[in-house]
Amino acid sequence: MKTVVVHEHGDADRLVLEDRPDPEPGPGEVVVSVRACALNHLDLWMRRGIPGVKLPRIPGADISGVVAQIGPGVEGLRTGDRVYLSPGVGCGKCPLCLSGRDNMCAAYDFFGVQRDGGYAESVLAPAHRAFPIPGDLSFDEAAAFPLVFLTAWHMLITRAGIRPGEDVLIMAAGSGVGTSAIQVARLAGARVIAAAGSDEKLSKARELGADEGVNYETQDLVAEIRRLTDRKGVDVVIEHTGAQRWEAIIRCMATGGRLVTCGATSGAKADLDLRHLFARQLNLLGSFMGRRTELPQVARLVGERILRPIIDRALPLSEAREAHRLIERREQFGKVLLHP
Image: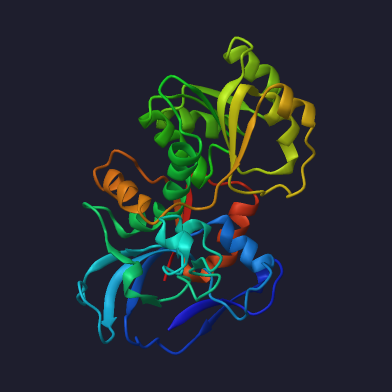
């Protein structure tokens, strides 16, 4: 089968197109013929170097396709079934997993990181990670929603506890998490302020349901947020841009506000004036993926077209390097996909 493999960490040129033997399913496993694989920043971080990743590795966490082979002991799946794969999962045995907090599991396992992923014509998967594609979603749509919508749902609903009428600032509104968070926040009844680095992205964010937009490349983010909230600041910030605008984002928050972060694309080390934290009683919340029990909720809403995965473009597997560079240049609005 055709695959794209990372043999050593580095830039996008480290993505190598090569042939590998077709996978064979063992007990409790299935082989899925990949129809689409959506890219995430996780793919870029793995390629650049995440501690503990064993190379060579096939990237790609968001996968949809057709069940091609079934191993011994697998029930509930048949060859030909249209499925999407859960991007990550806990061990299922530790106290955190058993209490429903599997996204806190120390052994959390991602396709494309701990095991080979979807930059390939076929992928080997534990059967319990394969789910029927909801509704009439296309393969592209089924690959585009799991990681980003699960992440956005967990950030807004579970971690932030968003309430109707609250002001929510969504940073990097043109990203996969950003486009998902706009829709989840609107569904929850919040007023959405989208922030992005181009007017074109802000226009698209408004089409998705954002009430207001701020271009943080050409406008003063703090001044605009204060103007839009009558100097109060926002109740919730959804953030994964990292260090570059951290200080400004803190100053955008209302007293008692909640900031939820799930990434650090512009740098992982940020300064924090502790006086802002305690005097204004701010809440800083980390968020990682989402709980296994949340994924069916998200899938149902996507399948019913209440939430809509946003796709920027799809490229052939042979153009994986260009796909990575598109994300690094921040040229996309929504998800970039690869087709084997």
